[in-house]
Structures are given as C-alpha cells and as structure tokens.
Amino acid sequence: MSQKASIKTIAELSGVSVATVSRIINQNGRFSAETEARVRKIMDDLNYYPNTVAKSLRQKHSMVIGIIVPDITNTHFSRLILEIENYLFQYGYSILICNTNEDENLEQRHLDTLISQRVSGILCLTGRRHIIPVNIPVVYLDRRPEGYIEKEDYLVESDNLMGGCLAARSLIESGCRSIGIVYAPTVDINHNMRCEGAAQMITEAGLVPAYIKAQRVSAPIATDAVMDYFKNNPSPDGLVCTNDLLAVGAFLALMELGISVPGKVKITGYDDSPLAGVYSPSLTSIHQDAKAMSKCAADMILKMIDGLPPAKSHEIIPVRLISRETTA
Image (cartoon, rainbow, N blue to C red):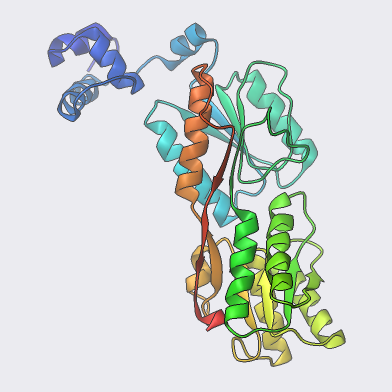
C-alpha cells in the first residue's frame, strides 16, 4: 500500500483520535492493548512507518541512544546490551553500539561520532568518565568510572563488594582455610571491589588472603599465573576469581598440576556466564541481574532525555551466589 498514509488516515481507519495514534507510536500515554493492536495492524496494512528524521529535527536529537562497550564478545556485556535494546525499543528508541576493545583513543573517537550524530543519550560501560560538551545525558552502567563524582554522575552498578564477600564466604563455609584471590589489574574498578569484598570476608574469618595476579583478564594468562603461584608458594585450598574467565584459567592450571577440583581446591567465579553450568565440574559463580541493571539504566536515561531528574543518581543492584560443583 501507499507509504504516504498519514497519522490522520490511521486514526480514521482505526476509529480513534490522532492523539491516540501518536501516543501509540511514541509509547507515551494511556491506551488499551486492544486499541494498540488495532492501530498497529492498520499501520502494517498501509506499510506506514513514522518519519523519525522529521521527529529528530523537531526534537533537536535523534531517537537513538549510543552504547559504549569495552568488549562486545564478553557475554556479560552482551546480555546487558540485549536487555537495553529490548527495553528501549518499547519507547521508540534504537541503539548504536560502539565497541572500544578497551582502547581509550578508540573510545574517544566513538564518543565524538555519537555527539555528531545527535544521539538522545549515551550509556557508557567502559569505566572512563566523560564530560560531554553538549546537552546529551550520560549514564554509566556496570563499571563505576574513574574520577566518579557522586553528586554529578549517574551510575547503575551491581553490588561488587557484596559479590566478593559472598564468593569468599562460600569457600569458608565449604571448609577452606587458605584462600587465594585471582585477579587482573584493569581500569575496571569492579575487580578491585570484588577483591576488597573477598579480602574483607577472609580477614573477618581470621585468615590471611593470598593474591594471585594475572596480567590481564584472560584464561591462558590466568592459567600461567596460578601454575606459577602453586609451584612457588604454599597451596591455597580455595580460590576466589574476580570473573569467570579467570576461574576457567585457574581450573585449567590445577588440572595441569594434577590437583583435583573441588577435592583439593575449591573455586568461585564471577558473572555467572552461560558456560558456568556447562563446565565439568560446573562453576560456582556470582550472578549479576543484567535485566534489572539494564532497565534501571534505561529508565534513568529516558527521564534525563525528558528533562526529568531520576529518583536516584546512583543505583546498586543486588547480586547472588549460584552454588555449583566447584565448591561442593
């Protein structure tokens, strides 16, 4: 059918007002599910689609929200992005994903592009703080940015400190009395907070934490770091790993050394990646609620786009331990 159908035509054929059609298109206001279904069927029959370019010109910004992500191949970030996209789509927004590969220069280039594209807002997952020279709302998600300012920045993160506590406590309750923390130095403050939480719980149990540093977040590098530590130090009987990749590396190192898991050493990961339940033995891990984090960040930035202050500028989403075979 004709692409020249107007909102007025849709309204007449649907038996509703132009205002109602507009509210349905923009997902703004009250209307029944029955009315929406009827209007959208007529829109489909007429091959009608909203003129988002004209709308962008009227609003001085596009109906696009940019997402700056450090590593799109990381399953945790992929889950966050999928949830964000599904949620924002209900409100007529599309997303533009910019992958930085943890490269600060590339991140700045992406940021410049998003600004030039007049995106409605930016969700930043990289852990770097940005001062945007134009009126574009920014919400930091998952990673607390370096130089974070409580009263100026908007942040949604999971409870990484508690996650570290839960992981260490599960090892202590499983009988571990010598616990190592496997971590990697990154710009991601989350790893530091997980280390801090684990160390706090280990210390409160009257134990002394050992630190095993991998040079970066990588399973092979973690394997080398754990093998080197076990060959040159008294062997821990428990390992808290600040993410699942490091936990996999630790497990492979113990296999190579002929040390049974969980018989001699118990392991916890972090992120509860899709493969955590598939490994053998399956990996005990800290689960982050990607859906709750994404919805909270999306709601926050939508309010800011509308010129409304979010109820809170800093949201901390609870985490939980998923117990599996590596701590049995």
